[in-house]
Amino acid sequence: MYRQLFAALFLLSYFLHLYLCRKFDTKPQKIKTAFFYSFLVCFLIRSFPQDLNVNSTLFLLLGWTIVLIDEEHHRIPNFITGYFSIAICVMAVVENQILDSIAGGAEFLLFFCALAIASKLKIGIGDVKLAGVIGLINGVVTLQELMFFILLSAILGLSSLLVGPSRIHLKARIPFAAPMIAASILIWPIWPMLRMNG
Image (cartoon, rainbow, N blue to C red; front, side, top):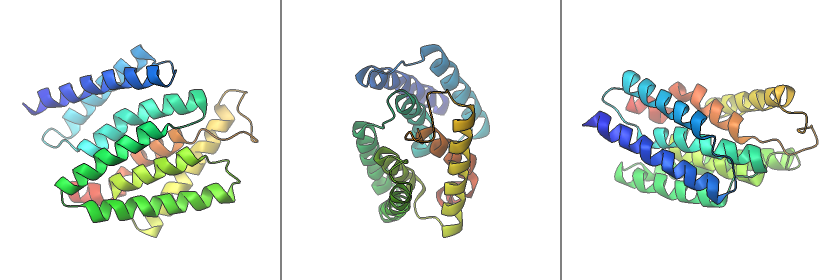
């Protein structure tokens, strides 16, 4: 039953991906997305056969859509981050973790807001909101964990500039969604909520 529900979640997410890409005039990369989602289904079912972390799974799926939209338009729509934040908060209420979730969202939001101001908005406001979403998912983290996340995101972001298309230059706003999402995935094992659920 678990596997059927899991597969159904991915199927629904695929159609949501197509809808969001169409709504925001972005190429949906249908074949790549199908392969990526299939890989995630196999990996997560094999690695976590009895545990479906809905927040983290939705973040993985929706993160791919956000990356494509950000790469195409250099913006992250409020429509996505707004409704996703509401969904996370509802799930946090159900799990009786709403205060930790909101505090984590505020923590990430404030740090990335300060980074955006320090970088003279090379990090966009959409990226700041995405950081808030990541904070809502993870809850409160230590300063060391947060700084490690920021450092890893920066390294991945700078690396993407070096290997990315020539149209991206240092004076342009960096498409920072992909580095942030990649960094959060790479260091998930140290996030407090994931330690608790593990």
